[in-house]
Length: 280
Image (cartoon, rainbow, N blue to C red; front, side, top):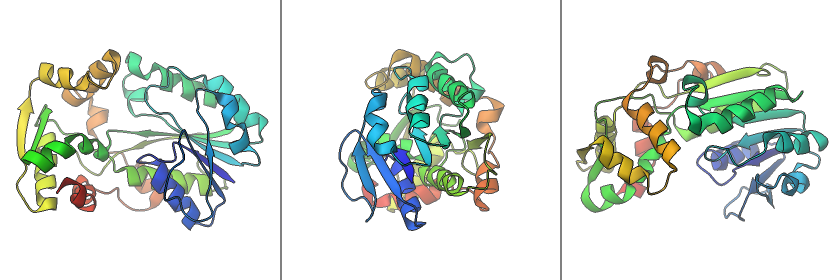
């Protein structure tokens, strides 16, 4: 059995679907009961902040996909991995973040680095996935595109190789269903095929919905004010640093999606077409 935490999110939901379609026995874990899970998939309510709440979900599990929402700073990685190990889990796939590697001084990612270190020292078979920026972050513009056909963002000409969450899920599914050990001890950086700027994202959304979407360039301070409404200050600072002054590694497409899946990652334009109805 494979247990998937964060099973209702942008990665968790397609991952559960892919595993179910592959004929795997799957338990989906989230803090609330979801709708629309595939036939045959079990669901268990649990909260990673309370490691013991995972025990019923992990009973009989062979592998665990561990998705850490946010910074993970409030979680106890040793306790979580201890519960998994005690339940008989042998393999863990951890969804971390590219910035855990590219930004070693970034305080907002200390929690994820702690999880990575704890997993590597756990004695479990492990694989770490480090996705870059998500294409689905464009959902932040959903209401402005619907109401005004505008996208407002800072650093309009700075491009990053955004990854489609469906590709993260596909890589996770490939790793979880491969029992040969080929992915053991590996850290994969997951990106899209090419850097795409906020202005280019606006153009792609416009092409997807069949109407022009206008780009409005925000100042750094305007963007900070907006992000501070729903993100902690350290996360705001780190996000703006990556968006505005990405490192060469953060701007460079990674070959890892291609290496694991045997196909190129999907571009932002494909993500935009797939979600066009939501933006109309």
